[in-house]
Amino acid sequence: MIDTIIKLWSKYDYVYIDGLLGTLWLAAVTVMAATAVGTIIALMRLSGVRLLDRFTVLYIGVLRGTPILLQLYFFWLTLPKISPITLSDTACIVIALIVNASAYVAEVIRAGIQAVDKGQKEAAKSLGLSDRNTFRYIVFPQAIKNILPALGNVYITMVKQTSLASVFFVQELMTSYRTVQSATFLAIPSLVIVGVIYLVVTTILSKGLDLFERRLQRNE
Amino acid sequence: MSESKELIYVVDLCKQFGELKVLKNITETIHEGEVVSIIGPSGSGKSTFLRCLNLLEKPSSGKVIFKGVDLADKNIDVDKHRQKIGMVFQLFNVFPHMTVLENITLAPMLERKISKAQAEDQAVELLKRVGLLDKKDEYPTRLSGGQKQRLAIVRALAMEPDVMLFDEPTSALDPEMVKEVLDVIKSLVVAGMTIVIVTHEMAFAREVSDRVLFMADGEIVEQGSPESLFLDPKNDRTKDFLSKVL
Image (cartoon, rainbow over all chains, first blue to last red; front, top):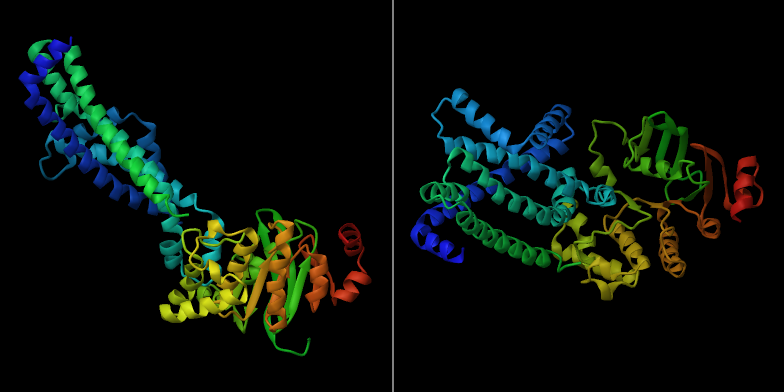
């Protein structure tokens, strides 16, 4: 088994490395865009404007209540039909991953903001701070300490979920597994290689997040 | 006191949470320089009434006129007027992510637009007054409950308010810390600050108040000087309440 794995790696290492790069690229784009979109969704949710609130509840509800694989199919099938410009499969999948992740990011941000003790906002308001200053100087700095650790977990999930893009042959690690598997008919060794690469990536990520979290908590 | 100027004038104030009427048509005046204590059983609406005075709680109907301006009017900028109404909470609500000094200087710098140096000078003076100067660079987690509450008081004072509202300021404190907070409030009384305080400290209310309001079921049932209210209550509910707490 070990021999086969080593042989497979030495022959097809470039396939896996291309896959890893694809995964990292997908993950980075998804994380950044989903964070931006998710923040906007969270702010809409908390805006107190009824229409916006209703929309976001629906948005988050649908995205969290249906399987991500279904969403990928849905975007992959419908986006090319409604888009004025030609979209590649990869583009459709990236958009679907971003939209899906934005719902989870939005919930993490909303929960983080709402977890800030109500008395903090009241104290700021009682001092005569404007809503804007209250959010900026009192609520947000405390919310971010709730948000960042939880967001880290969402990011790690997102990295793993990019593997679903392999269903559509987007270049990433699971697609590398399929490529090598179909060329060699060696499924399990290829799977082990890809699994180890995922583990290395997620372990580095979570260690990094731990370090960051501890830094955040140094005050107080 | 009655001939002095009106500072807060509450007219027909009602507050409802769903079906529950918490405040029923309260009309009351707070005069400049007056110290008013509000006592009564829990659930009587004392805290809600106090919180309506600076619009932290929005009245369902009625007016809260502070220095001639109706704070319940949607067209005014209530934040501006709140700057002149200090408030101290039962659970302190100091800002945990800021040092003691930053807790005090934040609002004056942002809303009174004074310089950092000026705000810090003022904060240092205030901290001296309440014996917390040695804590100025600490974060609030390092403070005791009594110290947090003293910080909360000077944080409010830094905005140079015309009136201070106290919402059960000693109820969350360990017994040995009650006195240090009451002493600070007493020093404000001596300095002539207008004060409205919701409290369960009957002895304190009796000692410092010009007037005591007794609330029950969303109404001010009885009021008067501390002597008359505590020694010679007229209303049955007042008598009943005082017999339980005194």
